[in-house]
Length: 214
Length: 300
Image (cartoon, rainbow over all chains, first blue to last red; front, side, top):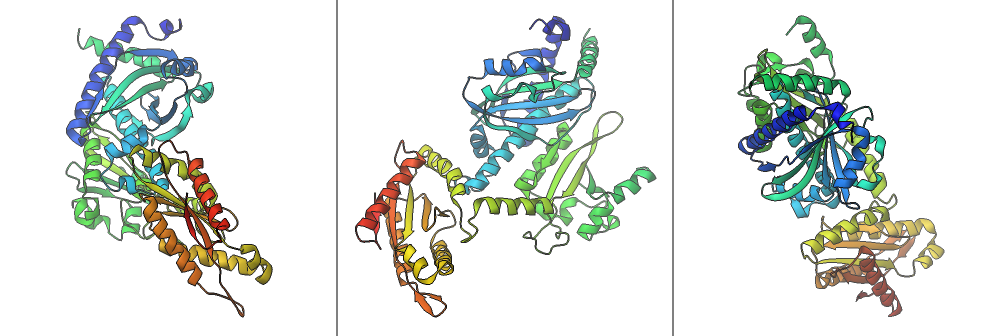
């Protein structure tokens, strides 16, 4: 992973880490205050990788055989790329019961339940990705728009994710987060894959951000 | 809005609406006028909820707040929401939907200082897509002859049902049944009559099960019924009703009166069961019902 150095310097990474911490804190506060979703977002560390190394990284972080689901959402601004949220499979079911409006639940016909599960993954993905990316963009003085979320991978083993699912020319900022949704633990990974030109913009934005404090 | 953009927004085949911070309508494009029957001049300036009280719910309000407060985007998928605006479906012949199916997007609009001043709503008509998806699902999950679920459906869902019931320690049972001497019906009256018998039995039994049960055509003349939240005792009682109803059924085919009986095997979900175990025990019970003289219910 020596290329890491080439993408962002240690100092830039520190600033980014700081921004992510602020962004996640604010995002969590907003979610709780405004839509009553209580989520604890931890950002223990961030990592900047080349997209090509991402599948290997994910394999090393997520225990082998456990199937996962992945929500993907694209965002466009100066900061542009795709956000991916990985959940262990089965989280969808958990999330349906957390997010649900109490309309049905166990009585759902199982076909409908599958659809609900998928839609809930997307809804949760949209909320988390929107809140996090939106905050980061806001702190860096950018304005982004989003594509609808999509469940890119459903119940798939991490082992079998092909390397080329991510744009190989891109870089990835990986944030490992643990979401505690309304007091129930749902662990997941959020990572942002950005095009090279966004990294260039990011470097500048990070400098600008720091200048405000100096 | 510039004259040029207004022309474009009035031409596009999607609904465009903007709302101010108090959710009053600011803009209502031609598409919205066309499908709602409400002129822009009439609705602009009014709270959206005055015209669409159905939207005045917690979920929609949350989404508006998320957009207006922290600039999030919200997506209202057709699968989850069906529609936001209750519009008549376009060209509604042969369509199963009472209302136009919609996929909607909501997002923030900002001023030069980047402050959110209003929100936009984009409405896309996805009725045709939803209808063809529904048709595909039907083709994939239903048996063409009888209209009840097919084996593919059973295989896809039995595992989930078993897991769900085991997880919450709920009872669940399964009935496997088969038409006695079905080959004789085919040989005596022909396959068309056999088809009629299959169809009639499927229809009759589906009237006896709850909406949460699944009736499946498992094979040729073999049926299977998944009974969620049902103990073996209740399943046996229900199976007994199946048996009685079918034995009393007289089916007219041309000049003939055709009567058949069914044999039934029951199994109840146990801890550590896989779908295969559950099916196997019901099948074994059915086999015993056959050996014991048919036209009876056996619990296995």
